[in-house]
Image (cartoon, rainbow, N blue to C red; front, side, top):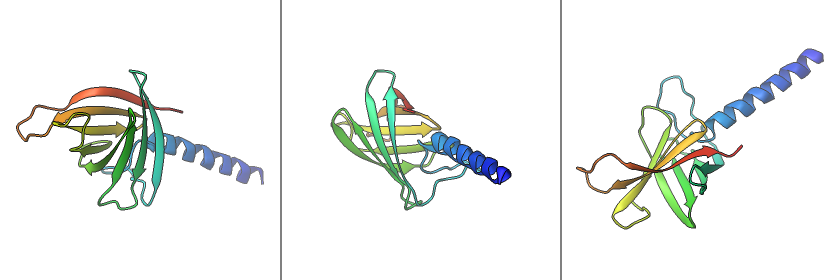
Length: 134
């Protein structure tokens, strides 16, 4: 009984750590990094600027994962973009008409960036650095 109790506690603790670490990850592209299949995960991020980003990761379709972000009173539906690590989402709908948004999360941290909607455009410009609210 005592061994089972310790085992159950250890499993719950390991699961809590895993979920906290993967709260910002919907799809993993690195070999050996588990994705969270058939799950919808909600997370709240607090940014260095003091702004809050509410994110709903929908990984029920691993081939078409989406993240819905609420930021500054607006909602953005973003689609998964292949990345070497973490989970990266993008949308053409941005804060201004000529720019799109990118949300790139890894573990408990994420970066929101603006990007020009042009194939010759420079790298996205970070506008928020955020961490999952515990």
